[in-house]
View 1 (cartoon, rainbow, N blue to C red):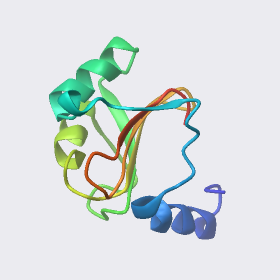
View 2: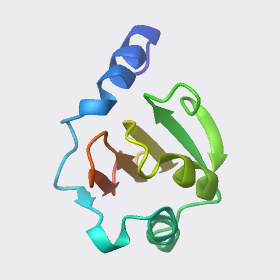
View 3: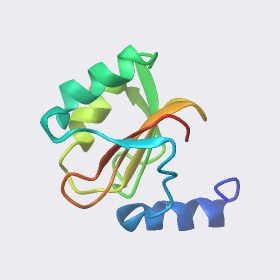
View 4: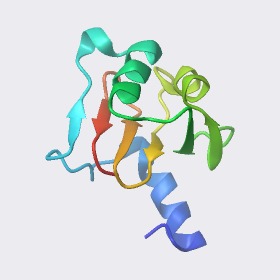
Length: 108
């Protein structure tokens, strides 16, 4: 889907109201851990490297390689649909537009 420019635009446009997370792999981050620092710790414990790739409806962040810490501080609680890819296809983070819509996907 996101291999083409048209497919990528469609995917990014759908991130704010994204409904395609596979709940078998995407686990809701517990409410008391929904801060950038806690989410970073969860991801680091699962093997996330220092840098990540960001795909976001926020055009300032979209399609960027960023330090994980910086990316999460720019994303968490900002109400933009965003996917943070830490290990392509294996580990990442999704933040939706709605409050408390923060997921730790094991596969993305």
